[in-house]
Image 1 (cartoon, rainbow, N blue to C red):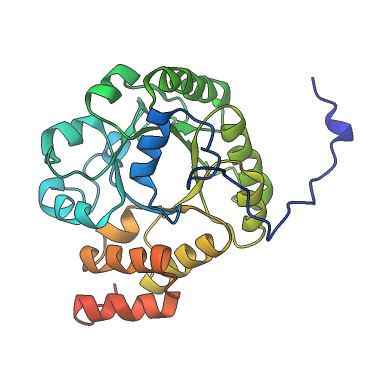
Image 2: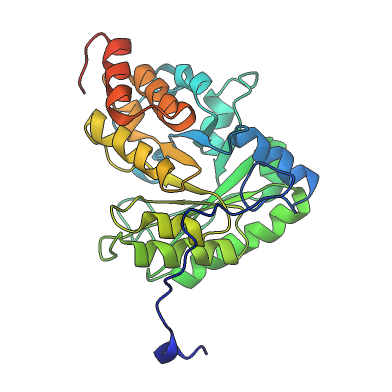
Length: 294
């Protein structure tokens, strides 16, 4: 066991010196095999960034607001996303096979919101991910949770299967009510997920020290949108995340619960890929939505 008493807080994160990725535009992926890089290249544009649209909430929440009818509310938005994050059931039943938007498929699950959420198990095989032509699979990791070791085992099992199939794994760091979303915790969670083999990490943004979280993680960090925020606040979070080293955002409720979801995802794209400021992104949303503020 490591001597925790002698563990000194990290301080030299090399801020301002981007990690080099020879031969490929996705952070940390230059030495992966062709199939893995080919799939990552679908998710991340040439600028190394991505805007993912998440609507996998129903796997534990049921038909939450904005997801009552995925065919009506979500499918029209997928053309604006670099990738979509959904369950295999929704993909097979509702997403047009000819749409072409890269798929990040939810691969863990089990308990509903009525139970202890950290007790997830693997909910699909990598063979089925290959059949569905997934560009990646997503697995929840509960660092600090009651079932931490089980969730880590879920992820490493998929990582091993992913190397055999050439399919990347997105480790999603879950934060329970008892855990603090600060740079110390997020740095621990994202580094663990990357060190244990995930090719991407999804986590939350924090106001202080987030650039240290992204600098210390050797693979792309994608920021979760979380609960619905005011438009300007959501765009500010996206802007700050990118400026502080994130490789993209994965937004759900901050897009599909808007008065005009199409306008919002286009504004997010402009912030992430075009360097638009949050205030200008807010103006873009209002212009595209006919003056809406929600």
